[in-house]
Image 1 (cartoon, rainbow, N blue to C red):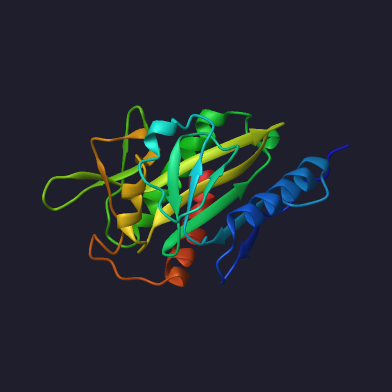
Image 2 (image 1 turned 120 degrees about the horizontal axis):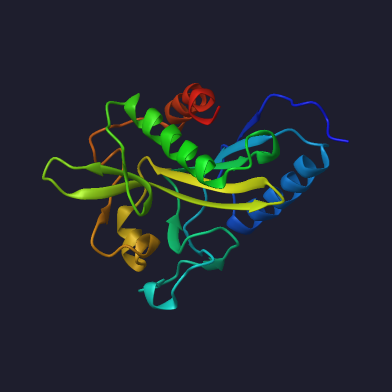
Length: 213
């Protein structure tokens, strides 16, 4: 018997969380949510420098990892970079009570990002055929500012999204980010928005309910 719904729990890590540790913690949380022993959870954090390979990763798109570790992971998508200055939101929700619609869930994540960016005067946009959120820079270039990669197990979601607040954008040159060669990567800082992780967290929390329902 499933337990009555409870409010989404928010967790924030103020120190860098190694990627394997985060995956292990998500696995335990997902099992708890599925069994009804744990509430749905959104976890905000940042990782040390790391490249991760999703389930569709092409080895040719790992251009030059250098000294940056590379981890294979169960999320969807291809290669991406995580590191200090990129705010990660791991979103662990039970879709059983949310319509069991994965496409709608991903659209909700995009809506959430767009609403969050709008709080800082940045216009985020969707693009057909390209998961994530994009901005058009002042010089007309179309660049990715937030990536999405999720996994769903027995209708419980995990992994999630990353918003580039002020990461080392040069690190994205070690891969073909999300398999897209023709567009670059940007950040809030590169768009002239200087904010703290706490300010970004507050915006994400304030826009979550309306976007994710």
